[in-house]
Length: 231
Image (cartoon, rainbow, N blue to C red; front, side):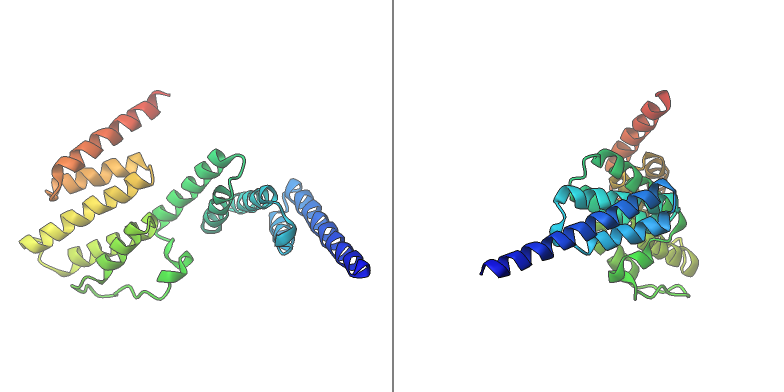
C-alpha cells in the first residue's frame, strides 16, 4: 500500500513539473511575442487539466485569448475570453471589453457563422426564397443569447425579402419592419449603441409594430452615445 502511495505521489509530482515547465515556456514565448508558440504551450499545459487550479485555468484562458487578439483572430479570441470570464478571471472587466470588441468585429464582417458548429450546415439560399427558415434560425439564436448569429440570419432574411418580392405588399412591409427591430434589439443586447441607433431608426421609419419601444430604446442609446462623446 505504501509503495502504491509513493508511485502515485511520484506520478503526481511528474505531472505538476511538466505542467509548470509548459507554462514557463508559454510565458516566455508570450513575452517574446511568439504568440503561435505560446498558444501551443498554453494548450499543452491545459492537457494536465486535473492538476490546475481554477485560478490557473482562468489565467491560461485569458492569455490564449490575448495571443489570438495579438494575431487578429477575433473568432478564436471570443471563445477564450468567454472561457476566462466563466472561470472568474481576476480581470474579467478587461476580458469582457476585449470579447465585446472582437464580437463587434465579427458582426461587421458577417463572419461569425462558421464558428458556431450548431449552424455550420445551414444553407443560405442563393436565390430569394419566401419561407420562415432564416427567421426561425434568427429567433432561435436570439432566444439563446447568440446575438451575432441572430444578426447574421436576420440580415439574410431581410435581403431575401428585399431582393425577391414586391416590397409594397402589407405582409412584406410588416416582415421587413419586424426584422429591422429585431436587429436593433440584438445590437442593444451587445451594448453597441451606435449600431442600435441606426437600426432602431430604420425600424421606426418602416413603422414596426412596437414603435413606442423602438423610440424608447433609441432615446436611451442616443443618450449613451452622447455621454461617451463627452468623456
